[in-house]
Structure formats: C-alpha cells, structure tokens
Length: 196
Image (cartoon, rainbow, N blue to C red; front, side, top):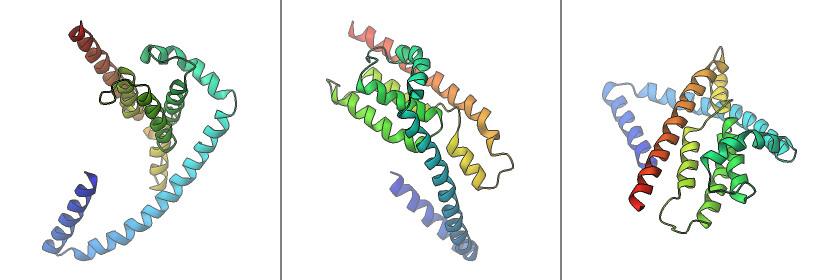
C-alpha cells in the first residue's frame, strides 16, 4: 500500500510545485533531503550498532536472565498459555526487552521469529491465537524505557535536548499498551462467552 501512496504524494508535490512556480524549491529540497538522509542514516547506524552490540553481549551473559526474572510475573499474566522455558517464550521476551530499550531494528527480527514459532504451534493457521494477538498489541504499543531511535533522530537534527522526548514517549506507549491489553482481554472474554 505504501508503494502506491508515496509515488502519489511525490507526483502531487511536483505538480503543485510546477503550478505554483516553485520547481526550484523542489530541486533544492531533493538535494537537501538526500544529504539529511545520509546524515540521519549514519547517526542511526551508530546508535543501532551500539545497542545491538549491547543486546548481543547481554544475551551471552546472565543480565538477560535477570531482566527476564523481573519481567516474568508480568509476562505470565499476559501470556498464561506459554510455558516459561519454551522457545517462543524466550523469543518473545527478547523482543520485549529490545523494545523496552527502544531498539526497533533489533526487536523486529526477534518478533518475527517469535511469531513464526507461535504460528508453528497454532492449530488453526488462519486465525490468531490469544497469545499472538497480545504479542502483536505489545509490539504495536512499543513500550520503551529508552526511545533510542527517536533520540538519535532528534540528535541528528541538532535538537538542543534530544532526550526531552523520554517522558512523553513513556506516557504515550504506556497508554497505548494499557488500551491494547484491555481491548484484547475484553475481546477474549467475549469470545469465551460465544464459545460456551
């Protein structure tokens, strides 16, 4: 869908620039955007390399196990049907930890692996399980303690205080998570009543 939306936006922008006589501004903005994109990519690459490295080191130490012990009571309530020592539990936990650290790029492959494992164990391949739905909601809400990506974008754009976004991100992601989890629980109860 995005493959068709972006070209439409570009065509409309160019047509509007021609109509209003601002074609020169379009040319300038193309070169400025290319330069900004390269700077942003380099800044984000450095940040992602740092945090991916930290996650790799953490996964080979006892740190992840300690973080998992802290998260276990919450994860057990959110995913009651998933066994604690199972492959999908570990993959989901790693994804949630990566999201908490604001590592969207590191969290994505972990999330995809977890969903693949959950789908393998899903008896009805055309329907999401409650666990899968809850996991998607948590990923979409993207609870973040450290919004690394947003901070790196703000830093690359010469923000005076790139970390000022932290508290609003906490408020937004916690609110989104609460709303999503509540919706999943409500729909699960409705589904249970339907099946009984």
